[in-house]
Amino acid sequence: MTKVIELSNGNLASCSLDKTVNLWDRHTGDIINTLEGFDSEIKDIVEMDGDNICIVNHDDNAFMVWNHKKELEDNCWSMEEHEDAITKLIVVNQKYLYSASADSTIKRWHPRSAATQSQITY
Image 1 (cartoon, rainbow, N blue to C red):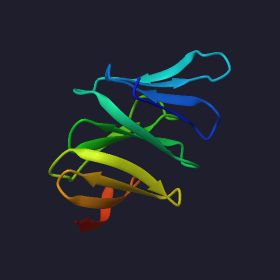
Image 2 (spheres, helix red, strand yellow):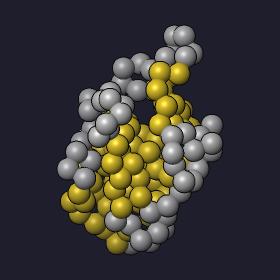
Image 3 (tube, helix red, strand yellow):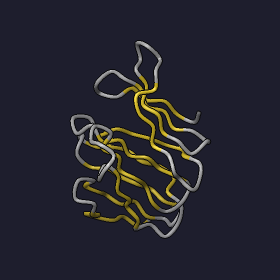
Image 4 (cartoon, rainbow, N blue to C red):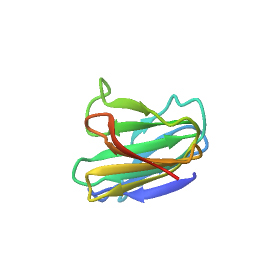
């Protein structure tokens, strides 16, 4: 396991080197849901509180947005605009996601629209 976070509903989410993301009932320890099928290890996960969307960063230039409250159809989408590996994800004001990359850019995203809104080159 590479990271565990508490979700806004009190349950837990974990990401792992085994290429899965699990949602856990924190009271029973049972797995509630699993997202799998990644090509590489998953190294980071964050949640946008209020929207109940988990963002999963895997080992390339893209990240996935997973609406873990929806059924399996149409609950995941990928965002790819960096030219090199994403090194960090953070949520600001529970609305925007910032991604930093080895391509020397920071991008601001609005995950519901699946589009970047601005870019900083450093």
